[in-house]
Length: 440
Image (cartoon, rainbow, N blue to C red; front, top):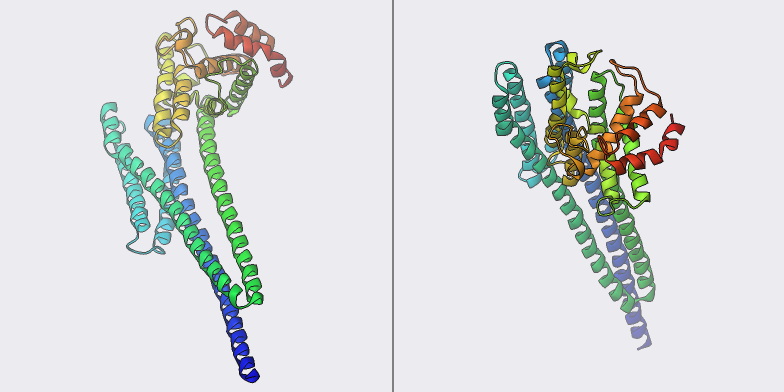
């Protein structure tokens, strides 16, 4: 009887050890599945997002060069066309990489269909733009605009929509992976409970491995959050650098080196911070609004892209006809901002950037341009931009004038407060003149 009991006990112990070992092996299997899932996510999800975002960034650059080519004169046409061709070549190289990546995806998957849609739409977009270039000089502005609205803008919107859908699918993949990993974890816990009933030692081992699984999940989830944050920061940096690059290119046409946009952006930021300190316009000056205005300030003169070089760089006072052409850059800037950023950036940011470009030459007394707005009819961001822009223009050397001293420029701002400038904005600006002069 004792021998039989010992055999039964031994069988129970062996079974318990086998169950415990099975639990350990299953936990190891879960870890392997976990590693495999996250390797796939890292290799595919982020590679896909990097690929499509590179295409989107190149399309922004191509769109800018395309606008430059359409409005360029013959003297500068070859230069802008070379830039356009270089950008097109970059896009086609990216499309080749895009196609190679698409071959790795299942042939009947939704992602493959979207990849193919992006691929086809981008190629069609390049072809339609080639046709649009052929219309330059042969067709009217209205025909060019109609062609753009009918063919090019819908293609661009489809590309952006497909890219956004791909990002959404990537996020769903991450969510599904988390769900599947959670299911594996739940099964592991059940095995640990069974092992607890059969053998304490097995349960300890199982709990250790369960803890390892939980720790691994937490680590990998932190990794995914980190990668997501890095991607958002990288995309934001690409967009900001693209905007600053466009502003620098516009300024360089008029003999500037890009310092004007940096200086005016800094002045705008100082005025906004001073207003915040005095609790001015509290219903408007949120942290997001301040950030948007500061980031949008470099685009205030983007409309100068439509101004011919002989007017933009004339080393003398413009005549009445030339000045009317120069004034058109404000309204053109507002339209270009919507064309470049509309549907891509935050709506409030785009509206602020368009207001700055469109209305920064309006005057408090209503004698500015392009619309003759006066007082608080002029958006606050444009009223602030007006002071920063005029001040920097006064103290800077241009092809048609020598620079003023800072004191002379401050006197003009003070004199024209309530006429050209919002008196409250001018007062805030004059309060920080010592800080501005210190960085002279």
